[in-house]
Amino acid sequence: MKSPKLRGVAQATLAAATALVFLSGIAYSRIAEAGPAPRNAVYTAVSMPVATDFRAGDPASDAVTADPHASTRAASTERALGALSSAVRQLSHPQALRDAFVSYFAFSDAHPEKVRKPYLYFVDYGLPSTTPRGYVFDMSSLEVVDGPFTVAHGRGSAPNAEGVPTRFSNTPGAATTSLGLYVAQELYPFRGKAGGRAYRSIGLRLAGVSSKFNDNARMRGVVAHGAPYVTESRAGRSEGCPAMEPERAEELLPKLSNGGLVFLFAPDSGWMANDPWLRG
Image (cartoon, rainbow, N blue to C red; front, side):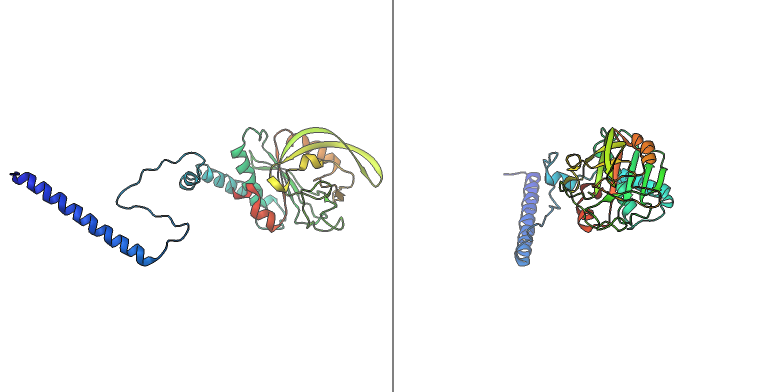
């Protein structure tokens, strides 16, 4: 015969098992009554924790693990806006400057080895070419290095030199401005033509890093350079380059070269919704 103590243990175990079966039956009936589950529904076991084996790069792991640097980037963006917003005279869209800073800090966080200088060249192409729309910021000291100043847009982006560019493309031969983020690369002697006359200036090669929006920049010859058709009061049209006054180019482009960033903005909904660096 079993001892009273053993009988007590057996009875308690039987009662617990009976309760579990009963509760499972209720849960099953409620699920059945609720009908089929939504395709993407996720259920969590409350009473019995389930061990997981998430690996880096798995969608499930990415969903569960928050970006540890997101809050730092957000704070950096707010600090930059607080320090620099008052120096920017006019914007075509409330998000213009924020998008520039979000992109800057997102790319810097993802590719610190490529951002070797703290300078950001920002152009708001939502403004007409007669409005000063370019700035260079020092993102380390949060100061304006220069700006606002006039900047050219691509002749394929607007029907005339005085208008607001509305067509943006990454297509070779389009002579259009391409929106998004660029890494400033090497300097070189630039040669161009304006009004049928040849001219020389300093040039800065650019690598587009906003995927399909500007990744053909080097192949297209989209560079930053000085141009005689850009003056203090107006900017002519380029072949897609964010050209500036020749004297200003001589001063600013060496600062940006080999590790600064360039951000070309316009209130274009398709680009704003899909540029990879605007997600922060």
